[in-house]
Amino acid sequence: MMENHVFESVEERTFQYQESLPPLPVPSLEESLSKYCESVKPFLNEQEYEKTCQIVKNFEKGIGQELHQKLLERAKTRKNWLEEWWLNAAYLDVRMPSQLNVNFGGPGPYLEHYWPAKPGTQLERGCLATWYTLKYWELIRRERLGVHKAGNRPLDMHQFKNLFNTCKIPGVTRDSIANYFKTEREGSCPTHLVVMCRGRIFTFEAVIDGQILSPPEILRQLSYVQNICQSQRDGIGLSALTTEERTRWALSREHLISLDPKNLSHLERIQSSLFVVSLDEDSPHGTPEDYSQITYKALAGDPTVRWGDKSYNFIMWRNGVFGSNCDHAPYDAMVLVAMCDYIDQNLKATEGRWKGPMSVRELAHPAELVFTVDQKILNDIALAKAQYHTQVSDLQIANYAFTSFGKSLVKKKKLHPDTFVQLALQLAFYKLHGRPGCCYETATTRMFYHGRTETMRPCTVEAVTWCRSMLDPSSTLAERQRLMLSAFAKHNKMMKEFQQGKGFDRHLLGLLLIAKEQGIAVPELYTDPAFTKSGGGGNFVLSTSLVGYTNVHGGVVPMIHDGYGFFYRIRDDRFVAACTAWKSSPETDAEKLLRTVFQSFQEIIQLMVNAQL
Image (cartoon, rainbow, N blue to C red):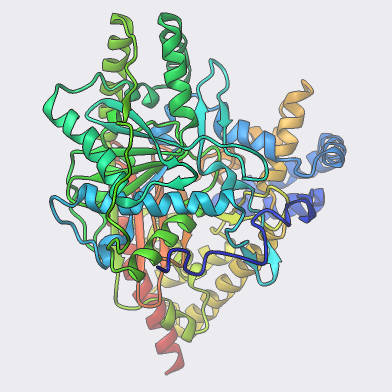
């Protein structure tokens, strides 16, 4: 049994380097402001640019100096000056419904090998995938999960403690995160699963006498739940409340708790569970070349069989296809990607079959969590479902594979594969919209203690100059190639700096939050139209991220109504990208953008070939 594949570490403990990781640095004010100035240039005319530069200068000499000093003071007493602020500002203070607008989700890649869609395989496959998920929990609990590294530098692993036994709890003005996970050295940890099926909620222990249930045992428990649900009437679908606007959900939850003390213990049972298994009645179609339907259903599927605030909902569809939906507050997508890659590698190694003993121990039946509700709660559920269905019907997702070439050819041409995708996206956006697209790309700051992400802005002056040359018939091949290589070099340099803690967006956010905390008027830098035009304050038209170099991918919805989400993974022989947009926006079309990006891939490679000739 290659159950732990290459993921298990015997020499190093998962969290052993945590305390020795360097603190998150505060960049220099001068550098951050100079980078900011450069980043707004593509979106302004000369006059506007001069005005913004003046505003930035005034900020640097005046209030910015004072705020920066206060930020340095804060950083003296915290190993990560940003952590708490980021969690609150980016996630917990946000009031819009988070399940569709903030959560990330995606398809399991298992249909690419041993598990193509096949009716009747939902539970038989699902019990094995659940078992591998529990084995991954056990690796983290025993601190045997290999430490992620950049070269030989350990990266922060803290987020892995938030993958299991974690849940967001709605608050009237600010949500909170309840984390019940402990490593073995820290103490005991809840070991029950929650299963949702047809609007009903069940729970059972996944570890008995120190042993994780085997796949045949998990199968028995899941079959019990499914049989009950298919032979009786549907449940009330309480979990639809988690799709609501946050304050409304918080008030519904308070009312629910006031009806019966048992309701609170049921909620705590869900919150503390390892994760949620969603038995979904849908059968989304999918192939290795087209994941659109599965990704759509992962992000926007049945709200009565997933708990939107849970750190991990494992979705099992009727046709043996799998997916996930996760709250984004406690961790970033790379945590889930790492786990799904572990499952993927192990399923490949065992040909997608359980080869262990088929015996099943005496097990208590799963228990149903039956809530006491009144008409108000039933009305709230109906309202939540209605607003959710209205919003999901507006979501457009295109998720295809580009298979003409992949990373191998791009690297052969001495181009960085991630930068390759980002510049193709800039070119595609420019072609479709006739203007530069302000863009957010995730840069990881996991080199630092509790580091999560920094904003990298790929819409550089160099990228825009190159895009214009590609659309200018009088531009020569040599000139286009020179401008493109200059755009590549700029992007690569920025990404390297930003991963080393030298970005500017989080720094600017910190300065703004200090001003707000101290009751200081919002500085002009943040009210200047250039700030929003260039994407500041969460206004990026393109919200993008490299999901990695594995078979696992997913996405989120756009950051703004007239924007796109663009998420991609890179393989030797292909690029797979998911593009999201809102149908009600007259400006955007996810299908069109994705097709144009794929054309841009061909153009860049063609440019390299022709320029060599």
